[in-house]
Image 1: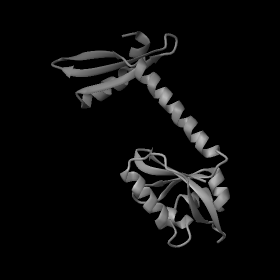
Image 2: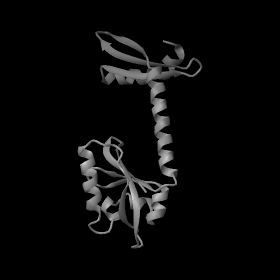
Image 3: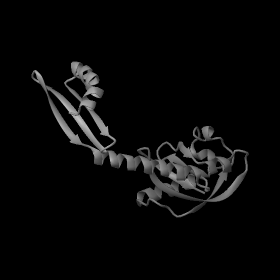
Image 4: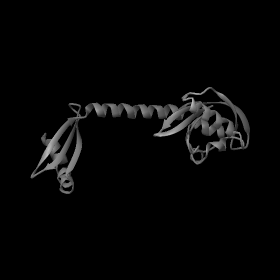
Amino acid sequence: IPEEITDAFQDNTNNSLATSPHHSFVAHDKFEGTWIEFAFKREGLGFVLNLRDVACVKKLQRLLDDSERNNSLIFEVNPNAMWVFDARSLRILAANQAATAFYGISPKRFLTLNMSALFPPGDDAELLDYLASAKESRHHQLAPVLCKQLKMDGQVVLVELTCGNVAWHGHPAVLVGL
């Protein structure tokens, strides 16, 4: 084990192995661009050390993180109003800047709403029926549908909504765009 890694991780490793039979950490050599996982296991009076190159895992994680950041940015600054709601509870999970401006709702307040709050009373049933039928046919992207929407100032407007089934932070959700 390189001396600089030993110096950096020895105390933490000793403390962890004093209370647990296993300990692992990942060390990165910026100069060489390597990522190595060090996995220690107590064995008899000594330890077994397994080394594993995790550079590919780290590279894929970095690409995934970049992709999530880019998608989040594209969603947030998109000039088209968009919002996401939980497919089960119908609670709004996210709304972009254009949606908060269109509906006249603050971002914090938006996240406290159920999607039915954006429809005149009873008008959300048509969209929910449409989404349910699309779910049974397993379509991810749905044809646009005309719906009445209720702005927070009480104004009712007719809009064309496009919807798509998405996974939002691991939850089944629906992305809605105006």
